Amino acid sequence: MLTAVTGASGHIGNNLVRHLLARGHQVRALVHRHRLPLEGLAAEIVSGDILDRESLVRAFSGAEVVFHLAGLISIMESDSRHLQEVNLRGTRNVISACRQAGVRRLVYTSSVETLLQPGGPNPLDEQVAVNPDDPWSAYSRSKHLATREVFQAAGEDLEVVVVYPTAVVGPGDWRPSLLGRTIIDFAHHRLPCLVDGGFDFVDVRDVAAGLLLAAERGQSGQGYLLGGQYLSIRAMAGILARCTGTAAPRVVLPLPLARAAALLAPPFYRLTGASPRFTPQSLRVLAERRRVLHRRAHDRLGYLPRRAEEAFEGAVEWFAGHDKIRRVFFSRRDLLPVAGFVLVMLLCLSCGLFGLLAGSGGDRLLGLGALLVGLGYLAISWPVRYEIDTRLLHVRAGLLHLRVPRQDITAVEPSRLPIGAPAWSFHRLRVFYRRGGKTRSLLLAPEQRREFLSLVKADASRRPAPVTGGHDQGERHEGS
Image 1: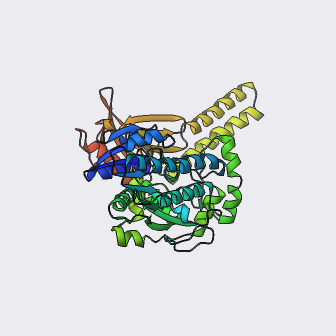
Image 2: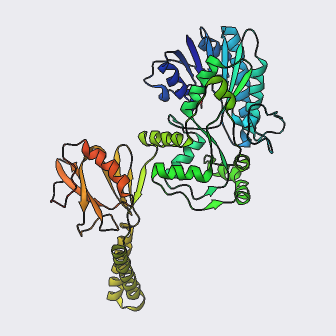
Image 3: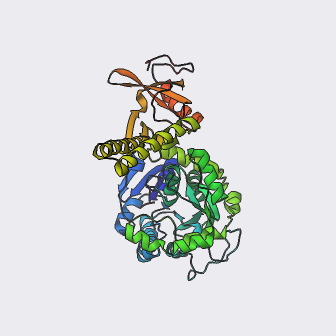
């Protein structure tokens, strides 16, 4: 059976294509621009645009089922016109093309946001009556109107089924999505604080499975919520902290304060060109702490989502494997080396300032030298962190950087050598690596020692030199 998928290179789309292929379906994947997520897959890839109806007719020719996932996602109210153009007019084109191509069933991916209303029921199910004139956002209004068009298209010549995913997270997030960018920011210490509230999070692989179940078992004219598990933002941060090794921000902004900050967000994003992370509308969704019931999908489709923690673990693992997340380890800080550093710094700076302010010409020259030594020492010594991605161990000590390809690491062992190292502790690890045909070593002192060892020892175990645990032994070193 031939199945066509619009938005096949998007987050849900590429996971759906994989899911369909794994179950023996013949897949025709419609992409607009981005093909990278589908590279190496045994799917027929065709170019098209949901705003070009003729390209859709060609793409749907011979298909029995069409999964319509292509659309525009934006939390910015200023994108209202573009959202209507893509999500509403594009969906009308898909419906028309399905009829012209003789498609039997259309499965449309809507959004849980089409069912949300301020002060609406909690928990939420598919029975809620939605007023399109009181939407959460421009995005939810565009999706609601498109969903209504799909339901109105149901008839003898075309079966339609609608699914409503909640907040989607998981592997294959190539763009990445807003939630994916939040995960990356968290891993790289770019989230200064959290906000109060919570939402329902679902694994993208479960959404893909739910879409196929809807195509196979769904009743025409029905909608199915594809939810996962409710998490507070604090609980989500705790999961990400365990997955990434990055400490969660300690500051949690109360919602009134976060809303006040969000009022300044749209002009800030327009001024800087940065991608938005939150708006007053998105904060309002979090503030509702809305639970979602997916009982209908469970009872009638056999839909069984996994825990949200597995979804976030899958996302972090995928991002790390595709160089979108670097594991960052800061140096352990012990009293003796830190105190020694501070003492030397203060001595150099005080001598330098004293020489410049109170001395003669020669004293001022010496004072300037001492000041430069102190500042230079600071510049090459603080801060100290070790970043690991799929290819490199990147050591940063102030302005000094050292990059070691992970494939060149040969061994790692404990060390207490009292010599200079990019570390603030004598409780060190000695990493051996090959460079220029010679074996070299590097002394490090990561705080999360066990997690660091699990990564670096895995590299060393693939090299000819063994990993030892003894003492120092010399230089043995969505888209459309």
